[in-house]
Image (tube, rainbow, N blue to C red):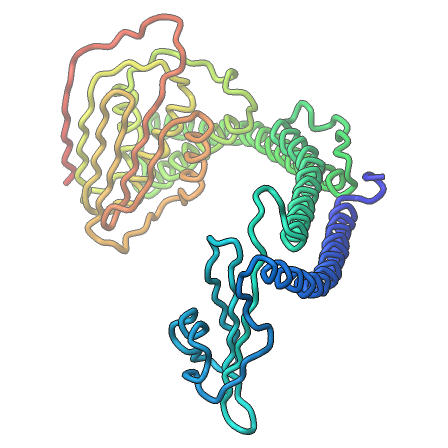
Amino acid sequence: MMRLLGLKGLVLITLLTLGLALVAGYTFISARSYVSGMDNIMAGQLGRAAMQSVAYQLGVPGPREEYVVTRTWAQQPAVIREAFGDEPSDMGKLYKAHVGGDEQFGRLYFAVRQATPAGERFVTQQLLSPPRMAGILSPAQGRLVNLALIGLGSALVVGLVVILLWRRISTPIAALGSWAAGLNERNLNEPVPDFVYPELNRFAELMRNSLDTAQQGLQREQAFLSHTSHELRTPISVVRNNVELLRKIQSSSAHAPDPRETEIVNRIDRASLTMKNVTETLLWLGRDDRATHPSSDIRLDQLIAELVDGLRYLLSTGVQLSLDLSASQQYLPESPTRIVLGNLIRNAFQHTREGTVEIFQRGGFVRIVNTPRDAGETSADTGFGLGLKLTERFTERLGWDYLNEPAGAGRRVEVTLIEMPAPAEPVAEDVNHSLTVHRR
């Protein structure tokens, strides 16, 4: 039945049932209260007649039952004025007073200040109240108790229905959340479990299809990166080999090489080196598992110095380079480490025509800050936006802390290289060295 109704149908029918039950219950209570009120009035009149008779037999002076109507409050009987104290002030409001409640027979006093065409009138009445009987409820009190019990029972029924509805709905929703949290590439193709309600089943199917589409897109991206990188390796190797061959031919020639020709060869060499680094980066990102990237002991300070020497051609004569390195041996994946640090150093060199570049390293922590003198400086070499994006993906995949933020006219980049679990304790030399290079 619940499966045929669906989640929305179940909630709608439950709310309608509760609404109808509440309307029917309060209608019954109202009708019963009206009838009970009329019965109370009649029972009260008959009861007061009995009290008058008993009071007469016991010699208790009973108050007069008729109404007392006067023009002023002072004209009312003294016993009534003493019972109320102050005269009624609000027009048309019923004032009540109970006197002698501890005695065998108490007295009830009623007073109304009423506006009439002939002016204000004060209307009062005295009644004998029935004696209090220990352990015995009056009919009016019994009816109040019944109404209270009916209201309490209705509240309990409504609360029970709400609890049952909540459990009926929350259980499959919680199961859907647990199933969605456990989805991965291994169980993505398994059949969707039954979550009782058609709405939840459709939502689960939509979620699985969305994740499956994203997984397929990711696989296509990885395949594209891998194939593209492999295809680019061959022409890049050809270009670099021919550049080396051209340099050998120039060096073996009897004539001095043309400076313009040498500059062209150098530009080709730098462009091919940039393409080689980007290709290696794409190829590494196309791999699925971190375990396929072997780690080894790396002297991080020596690696940074080697990268700086290899990229020094990017520095113009107006750049002051400062290196502050500390000897440290880290157990890291060599290829990703070289790619990340090389991208960051190349980016700092390319985007500083005049100014300073500071490279600081302690242990696995590396900070690179470039400060151009001119905020409008741009790189004239090949663009490096792709390099920064790839660096972010590298550090995210390896779990390295990475920060790239503006620092004045330049940038501040910080990266913390986290060591992989090593089979043996790494060996580190306790030697610090600082090197400052000035380019004029």
